[in-house]
Length: 284
Image (cartoon, rainbow, N blue to C red; front, side):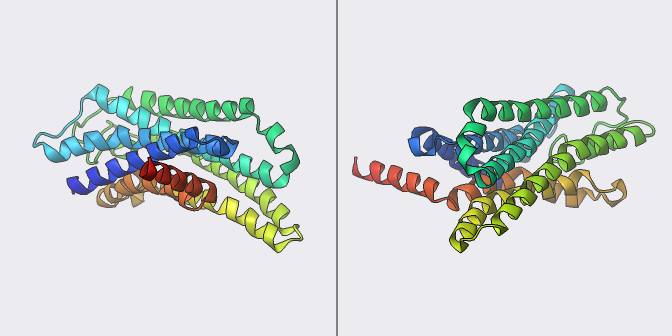
């Protein structure tokens, strides 16, 4: 198990780092869409790195554990990077909306200043949600010290709190609705406008090209929001530690690997840049 997790971790780090390097080294890819993709790859690397190294350490040594402060730090950064990714996907949906619905003004609307503000806004939202959850959770008294999970996630920590945890559960749901549902509704709104514009196109080739530019983003959105919704927007009565552990492996290992790969392998410009780099390495 540890070998598989380590292999996927190294592969994901390699793929995401390669994507960032290729985009930054290629002038053709200096556009808003690829600017957001570099941040998506960066967030995926950080998201995994908050969880996987400690998980591997616990798998490989007999004494498993994490300090109180270490648990709080892990939880904050896990939420920070996860929520920042949700809102970054919103920024990417807005980018596709402008590209398809208002192409003539695309470079004016999606200026470097606007793109930078959208990315900063994503990180700010991640910071706020991470701080709120972490401060409220770790300011409450704990009656247990053994967490039944691979890392310091919200649900298993709630099980360790003393007394009635109803207010804590409400807080989790309220913040999750803000971070997941509001962000998801913004994506849906963008795609309603996008699809409306696509269906009005007279050219079948134009419609196909527009659908192609959006399909990768939709797949990534489905993976990311589907995972988050399953974990944080379901009743506590349906919690099952074995299922939660299995699913946590999926969204902390598999999803960070798949998301940038989906974008890259379905994008001709990125594939062209990879082929160009490969030929350069072979013949130099």
